[in-house]
Length: 147
Image (cartoon, rainbow, N blue to C red; front, side):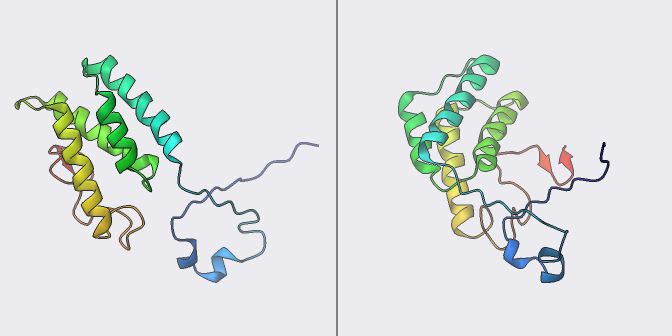
């Protein structure tokens, strides 16, 4: 017998904020999984893969020192935030019009992200994201897409 139906997956950084009538209703969410933040070892692997992609697409190869610094400074960050840093840098490079030192640009972005997270605008903050959009590190971004 073949069963047909709908399989729904929902995610939340704050399941405690979901109304009990939704979260604890029988047959609504039968199985719940918690995913802890990744380890520094996984960050090292993920950042290494991004470093390979940046090198392949732009010829920029971050130093081992910067990669180690990135691993250290992204402790507690999700992969989404690490990904955002690399994509922002690639967009900046692709936009041209300015000469940038990629390593300094990445350090600046990491510093800026740390400030955002401390202020509650990023990972785990009350707003769950940027209040007015990403920082100047991604100059071509506007709500709803790139300009």
